[in-house]
Image (cartoon, rainbow, N blue to C red; front, side, top):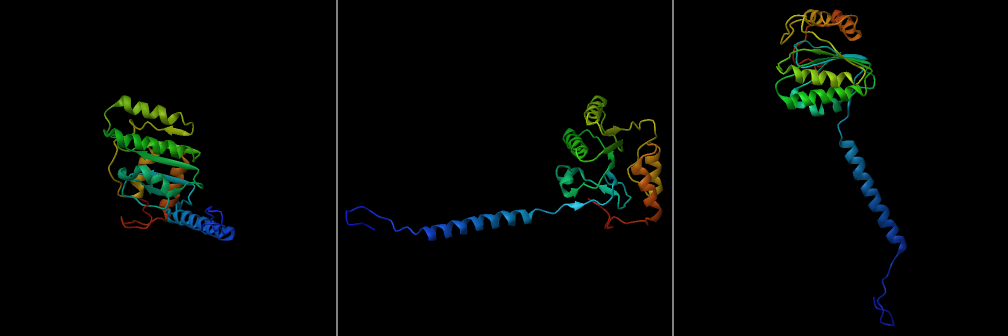
Length: 201
């Protein structure tokens, strides 16, 4: 609009502008809330003592399996607030990238959990110096213990029964709270198939 003096004057309605800004803020807030709502919810781990392991053939409510292909995001799927102690069966391989991810996962868990015991499960890594490097890295976390199981017999690929798993763990640890919990759980656990609901992958 052009005024009497030839000066362009805009018809501005402050109430309308305020309403439009409020609408924009509401839309932005709604979008943020929608994004938050779209984030997958973490599974709360109710057990205070758990075993973290690759696929071993035995299932239980205190056993949480990881896959090498999902190491980057595995921890983000769970809420570890209730977890006090972990036994972590680790498999170091010749694949340096996988080893890096496993190492990072252990250190991330060490920030949230009071006690972590690492037991070599399958050591496919021939570079002893590389293994020593990871051991030093984990131990510096303070609450991480490495169990040297080289003299405790051969490792196995899968366990057919709870008893086999417990024999493996008990041969490598003494008075471990996680192993004690698994021993109690084994009494009430029935044989489970791969499709069982307790398989945490």
